[in-house]
Image (cartoon, rainbow, N blue to C red; front, side, top):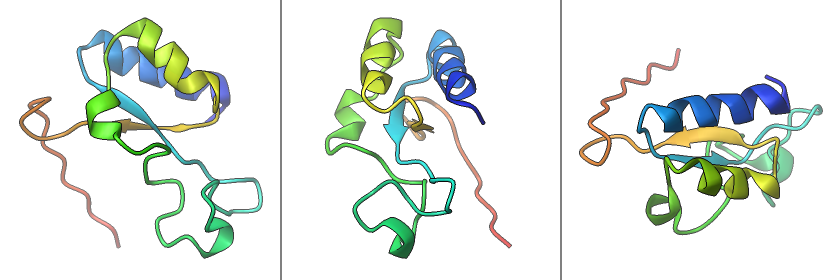
Length: 92
């Protein structure tokens, strides 16, 4: 997805009342943007910041600020009782 699409996705979820937070992304070379880089075992699928549960938000201004420093961030969502969302993740 493009940077614009990722931010649009974050805003779209937030508009539905779903708290979002920025996650690391994957570089063009396939490495994670975290310090582990190519050796990351959860590439592009983990939070960029500590305290992500507390800072996850559906407030549009807070979403804009959260993505300002890293506009290429993947979009994480809070699941379970805080959001009422249940996710089933099946990896082959």
